[in-house]
Length: 141
Image (cartoon, rainbow, N blue to C red; front, side):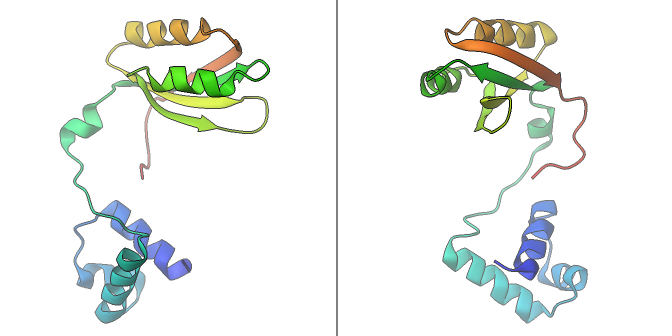
């Protein structure tokens, strides 16, 4: 993918229903070029579909946060499996640096969020953690 493809994908992420005319104006390309690029991205499997974001989707998880987790020795895979079984854990990321794993947590209330933190901290092999609440989101993929 080149810079034009990346800009096109960014525009589609912003509004997947944008017309070819709108996209061509926004990107400074012809409609034919935009259509051809979208077709190629779909054919290569870079774009696998389009979606709708509902108001309810944005209201899900009013309490969200990131928990950075330090894990002792070789327990990472086991802990990732345990985290994957928690319904409140939305995403699990391996990372480098001080923390071994970063998870995104989403709950309805602060009390539920606190309970999830408590359960994660009690997992055998978790030696340290740091949590940041997400206060607002300015851009979402």
